[in-house]
Image (cartoon, rainbow, N blue to C red; front, side, top):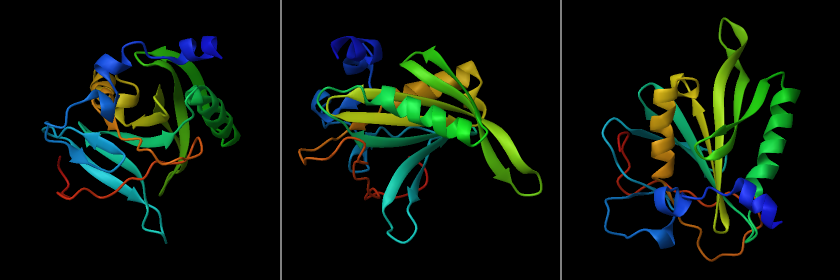
Length: 194
């Protein structure tokens, strides 16, 4: 198991992020989403994705420079390695939906470069680029999906990776099964731009 962890471990995660809440001071002007915190920045717009019927926040999307970074924090076991499992599952799901996907190595380690089938009014089913990134942290896993020009443009993609690395995961002490979405909430200072 230790070899698996080493293959999936981002060696500078505790220095460059994404961070565990135990690794940062509370002095910054964080936007508090419950299990996620982010630093406000010029030109960054926050959208929360809410599940129909339950009004449960299931993802946060950060829009910047015409691209989107969707983020979701999950509970994980102490042994980590959840990104390996999730990548395999994502790859299978995308291929079953007639998407295209290749595994690559990016600044955070293994990632998936995909073309995802999306229904576009007037055009039908269209393949759109998406980049799936993930990081295993202490008892949590953080997944990101980059869409728009940043999914294929190196400079824009680097900006999204920088934003992703600036995130803080607040795992909490509640016992949760691996892959359980950590609770997200609408921030107190709810507005479009953060």
